[in-house]
Image 1 (cartoon, rainbow, N blue to C red):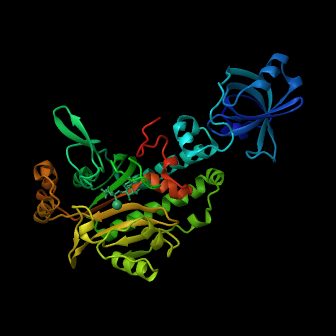
Image 2: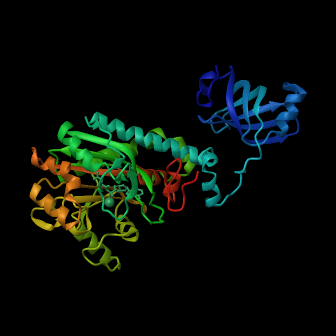
Image 3: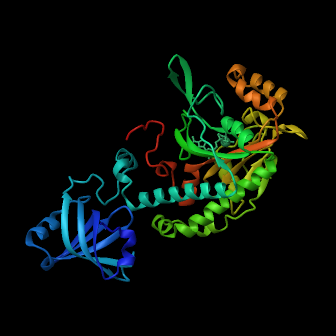
Length: 429
Ligand code: 4AD
Ligand code: MG
């Protein structure tokens, strides 16, 4: 049975056998230093010429990067090693001597790396990001499960839009028209009326012609939806969830954050409650900071970055003009020109990571909104039913996974937050 690098600390002084790839090597006369990786970690193997058959030594000396191996050796504690251990290699079996590896250990351009994404994910940085992504997902689900949300899976192929009709991915569904889902929300509203507190976690699609560091064509969203919960209570759920996730990642992924060189001091502050400002206050803040802004417009990335600079943790911007937001958002009864909604803006220029709102529960108003937004009522008959049969106040939100990963990892671009990003002009690999 093979051991893994992650478990070597429990095998000090013992002989072990690993399956591994050769990440890098260095030689010094009669010693070869083999940097080995097996997916669970990295370790240096030390191979002495006199320890192995001459043929094995000759082969090892010439081995290309990313060759696959079975390695036998004795685990030795070494405080100079990053993992605290080294392996004194006693046997080496080459599974495959690799072809010349395209991602040599030097700087490469982003497009080249993206073309080789299937190999790039083997690098320590990319591995660290994917591990943190997995931890974020796990912590989100743990927290929601503990708070008694039920996981419900909405469909990916849908007959209608949720977030406007301009960025829908169209496909044929036999003789009908269908669209890839932009958001599971409308289905989650149905699920909330059946199960109370629910959430979905799945891929969503936006045919957006935006080429920014925050936009993907295919991204993953966590969408909680809650019956008998108003806008304000929903914000408490959002800040509770996000502070849990950030603190758990700080605790469980210290090694990975270190690989990324993340400044963790900025994350340590991320604790509930988060500050809240209204859209009106945000507009004033921008003007005070010398950024001209018309009331009624939506914020762009530079505005969000400027607003976030005034806070040391994520900030909720609430009560946006009803006009710039989605059709389903409930207007503030005191002031119907603004909606009971909030975007959560991450610090350090990462922008909106959550969008959420209380939903319209009045059937007449909802019908009026379908007309105003020129949405075909017949496609939403089932959604209207939710307001006919026991309509209740309810709220929900969507947390964008990739933007959250980019922020927690401190990355320049969302393209590194997902194993195989789908972007404008990129469908390969
Ligand atoms: O603000 P959005 O569009 O909200 C919704 O889709 C609601 N139906 C969610 C809900 O209430 N259930 O998207 C939610 C989040 C954004 O805050 C952002 O983090 C992320 O999804 N997002 C994107 N992430 C990457 N690339 C894109 N093109 C994104 N569009 C939205
Ligand atoms: Mg939004």
